[in-house]
Image 1 (cartoon, protein in one colour):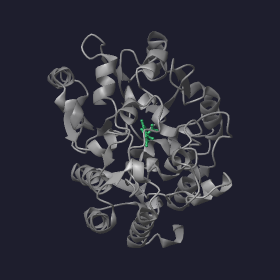
Image 2 (tube, helix red, strand yellow):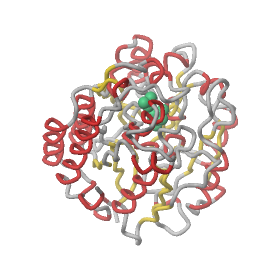
Image 3 (cartoon, protein in one colour):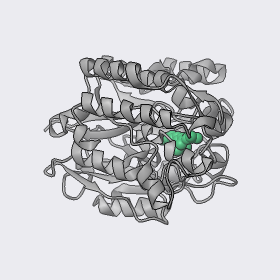
Length: 417
Ligand code: SUG
């Protein structure tokens, strides 16, 4: 069986809006109240997937969830019609687009039973994200239904916040070999919440039957969370033997690097020094929220947001890195500005699964023709703009519902509607 890295991108849902819901996410706060462009946002996501296909990568997708989430509002003793504006905004978010927060994934070579394990993230810290996991779980159970190859777990019980793969990295000499799994947790975020609890990370590692000697639990720097790195993937990313990170990402960088060297001697750490790119600049440009991918022609490439290209400090550093002939060989900017304005870069939009594509429900795998079909549905049904001050518009709810149904039908996934 050949294991391939597959990136599942969340499609930007038709309710995409800027309600400023995420404390500690600077972009979300900055753009609160702006007019969003759901159609353009979703089409940016489609083009990102298309670009990945053109690089020769295998691409999958997850679908937008029901919004407003009437079941959640019902459990809270209210309804879309009666909820106050703040609660309704929490029920309207399209935040499930950020698939890096859908689940934590331990691929088969790392687990005790040789199957790929996925734990859906509970996302309890943020109210607007806390009700994502049910529909996410339903999609995961369908996409990864083949129990010879996959085990899909429910969420870690509440109290212990779990934000999925955004706080997870894996290092290995090459994809198919046994890896070292790094779980990054937050203890304190200064004025902002630390969203990933160490007990959640430990629970995931136990459920996934990981070898305790091949797991590292590492604390995110308080200063990084306080500067706006609400998830570790805003300041670090790993792929195969490469760890690409900011100097100030971790609470105890030296201890982490020593542990990485001990457990994965093949690892190469590409660290961006703070005196070249400050934490603030790294977070504003999302240079680390890149997809670090192994290119079919060899070497690794960074698929990063155009905002990184716009910053002289960041781009100069990256160009010098490429000239230095390290393991990262190619820079590939992508335009996901609509998602970026809510704090979601290229890496936030995708969940990585290492598996044989033939073992996955093909309805979740895309090719060019399917992307064309998806783009046509989006072009026809997604709202052009949404003003977050007008989320209580029943006409908007109908449009969103029709749009979502049309997409599920186009992908032959009506059973999930
Ligand atoms: O959880 N933004 C998301 C962004 C998630 C980014 N994901 C990763 N780093 N992997 C969040 O903060 C903004 C929603 C709003 O304000 O309406 C939001 O939820």
